[in-house]
Length: 288
Image (cartoon, rainbow, N blue to C red; front, side, top):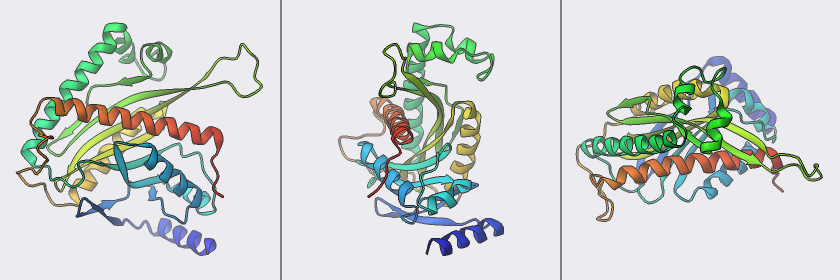
């Protein structure tokens, strides 16, 4: 069976087939095309699928809609292995809001509030170390002292870099500290694992979705460009949102504090996923 699946996968890659899968979010069917050079994780990829389920259960705010891994890692995944998963995409929906309809006008207001919250977070980080972003602008990979930023915050967010009437994207560095290996010398220091991530909040056919893209720290710009391309593809594949919204009485998208909530959902969600990914990498979780 696995040989057949691998053969089918190879044929699809050779033909360059571009398809979209249907997912139901809060009673609405959405068309989700796969990111370029990525494939949807399915139960046939036993270990990776198990991992995706762990990701879903660990995130108490949002639930998985779809999880994608690099096409280059798919053959190993179909063989029952758990690849490095250096680059991944995850599409999520908020557990409490997936049944609600978000109108175009309200989403625009939500974006404004979310941007205000991000600016406040960035200002708080700058207040602790005013030169962080000055150094960052001189070059992330070569001249920026990332260790200094991590001393200030384990999460370093940047100003939104992409915005449309249906989406808002921000990127960040996230750091997890791994304790020394068992049996290591007493003076051994914790190991830093630094990831780059781009998070996008989208209004897709009236449904509020969160797109997370992860990669190693040197690939920050890739997470931005790849996320932008996938965001545009998803929005183009679905109906435009309605003008009016439908939301519970205790969640008014026009209230100023909703931007604070959305910003925190994105930041907390991103951090949870990175922490779990590094835990899996370290312990190589296996199914029975």
